[in-house]
Amino acid sequence: MQTLLQAEFGNFSSVIEHWAQHQPDKPALLDEQGTVTWAELDQLTARLAARLVETGLERGQSVAILGTSCINYALVFLAAVRAGGVAAPLTTSASPEQLAGMAKDSGAQHLFIEGAKAEELAAGFLPELEHVPLEDVRSWMAPVGTPAPDFEPDPKDSFNIIYSSGTTGIPKGIVHSHQMRWRQFATTAASYLEAGLEVRSLASTPLYSNTTMVAFLPPLLAGGTVRIMGKFDCERWLTHAQADRINVTMLVPVQYQRLMGFAQFDDFDLSSLALKYCTSAPFSAELKRAVLARMPGGLIEIYSMTEGGVVCLLACHEFPDKLHTVGRPAPGSELKVLDDEDRPVPAGTPGNLIGRSHTMMAGYKNQPGKTAEAQWTDPATGEAWMRMGDIGRVDEDGFVELVGRAKDMIISGGFNIYPSDLEAELEKEADVTEAAVVGITSKQWGETPVGFVVLEGAARDVAEICGAVNARLGKTQRVSALYVIDEMPRSHIGKLLKTELRERAERVAVSAAL
Image (tube, rainbow, N blue to C red; front, side):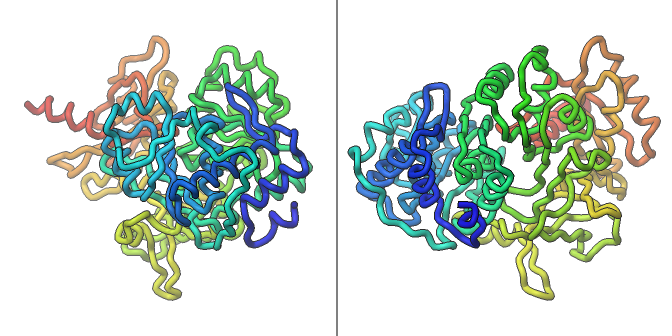
């Protein structure tokens, strides 16, 4: 199997069949309701795939899934791919209008939907689709013994569509091919087998998130066991990690932060942990140090996008002096740092990050114009690179330090201000547990930086904090206003929603001017 996983291309369904034959009784999937063995995983996905084709699924057609992560959700995802279709998980936090837009954009004719979500959306939601309750998947599938339909994927066939987490409008559908997913995850699975690691993974982010795939697909390709959690909860996560002897997991920074702040954290035995991953949002050096000190096993930060581009890896346990970075480009990844005119910048100078790798998206579903906007074409070679949307610099050792999001950069009085610099200064204050800085419109300067902080305990007066920080900043960087906030607004996978903070700051500024 290790040799197969190291091949340039392979069939995910063939891997499932292999493990079902070699370890039929081993658990493949776990959730709060039960267990599915490898033999059952093979049989159930085959029966589901057969019924999908029987009810009209065509090769390359999407299967929409909407609900809380669970075993049945995972079965539908895998069966859609096995049938020659495309798994299209939909974001549960999206508005009804966005959900309808995503489902129509995907081209699905099947919608597997959780009962509670169906009740929330009420009758009349996408009546043109065949609705299948996620809870009833096993009664809907083809009879016992029905074989999977014949499907041998082409490398360019679509594997899944992941919808971006935009706060307004219809999210863009990011299409991943079979080739991309194989290159992305088969090598990781092979490395687990080579290391002799019998993977027991805990997937605690939603299955509609690209982040979760790291804890879901490679462990299955390696013949491991995946525990699927619904909603994240510190105590339940720790309980599962201890009871299942979890050795691989993926968490986003806000989850690590909550675990580090959980009062009973040290009461649980996490000694089986061998490898922890983190991605999707800024991961502060301070939080990395805390995780390294308190959680066993290696810690790897992954920097990339759902769309692909450069993939940077930071083995935090190997480079404790580089925790302020996101690591170096992984093998097969390339990175350029360009100015606003798409010209290379000198080494160590901040610029727009442009990347490419063998894990690039096929494009945005039905949006060739948006796909073109997201890319940069090398004028010398004609090769397509992805605009990462981040401003960063590369140090003398090749490690990449993020300065901020390109769209978040503040231009005040003609000077570029990077929010991350100001946020770092704010977080040096003893009472500040988290800080965010955004730019708002200013008649005098064009834009001006405004800060938000989360405080703990009997904190100092916010004006005192602002004054102390501004005293350490250059005149062009100083925060014009600072507000206390109970909790930072975040997306379903923990990304800070600066759009909401910017809107809030603009409203306050307008009110003050009246």
